[in-house]
Length: 167
Image (cartoon, rainbow, N blue to C red):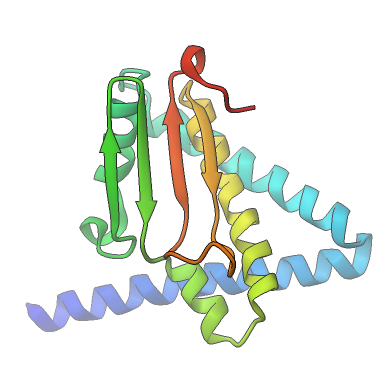
């Protein structure tokens, strides 16, 4: 049984690494075809839309408050949260999730990409979360990884829209 669990974990990790490399290659190709700025815009729009699609099913029966939405999000984190270890702090008005590790970022780092390119790809990947949480009816902000900031991966903040100064 343990061998089967280890095999499934490896396959899941491989699937996320594949996703990371698809993002990288799509960005490379789009930049060649339409330029860097337009490529990033198109990818962000597509990833945000996918987040909105996922939110429709994921948050269908969830109260539209930061604690409930955040708890649902964390409850479906792959491998019981082991792929994206995190810490979360919640009040009735807001929830902050600090992700310590991301298999997408790890794949980009392992492939030897420079920190600036990894930061760009992290910003793009964060568009999925924007679509996901805003479609759940919350104000969303995300400080994605950069070499300057350091510290793991995404730092996500969810707030009730009426209490938000997030634009």
